Amino acid sequence: MSLENPELWMKQAYALAEEAASLYGEVPVAALLVRGDQIVGRGTNERLRSERTASHAEIVALEDYNLRFGRWRCEPGTSLVVTTEPCLMCTGALLWARVDHLYFGCEDPRGAGLLRIQPLISEGVYDHRFCSIHGGVLGEECSAMMSSFFSRMRARKEYESDIHFF
Image 1 (cartoon, rainbow, N blue to C red):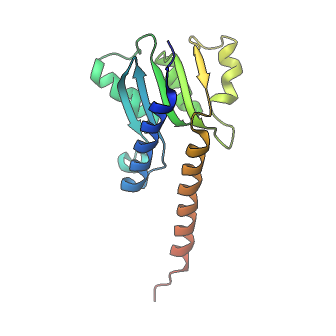
Image 2 (spheres, helix red, strand yellow):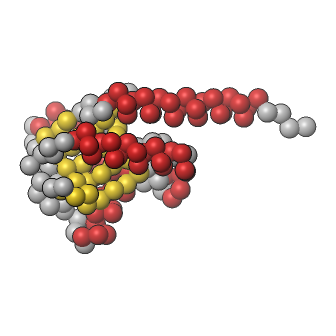
Image 3 (cartoon, one colour):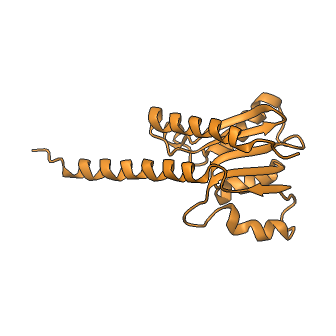
């Protein structure tokens, strides 16, 4: 069963992503695993805080689910709501975890994520297929959040490169 109001869940993910960016300087991506009307896993990007390559929001949400419920496979009907299109690593993890429905905000501007391999998933190359994929959920807002974050990062780097120590 897919989500009745994905925008509601995306607003929560968006707020979580903003919080991670403002508090920790993380790239503003957040993911919620939802089953029925409950969040069963949540995550934000934690690569800076954890110094772990694989600490993407989707992976952190899956790990939260694993710890809370003591299982690696998501219950049927589980949806993932994430502010940005999952990358290849996260798409693979979501397939292995048997997530049924995927909702994402903005697309990966490099086109290197979920949508790139969606044809292979649909053809049955992998053991699992998503029941549904819905992109563009609050897509403009999520895209603007990412653009703003990276603009601030570039501006800060330019400012820091202008500082001269004598």
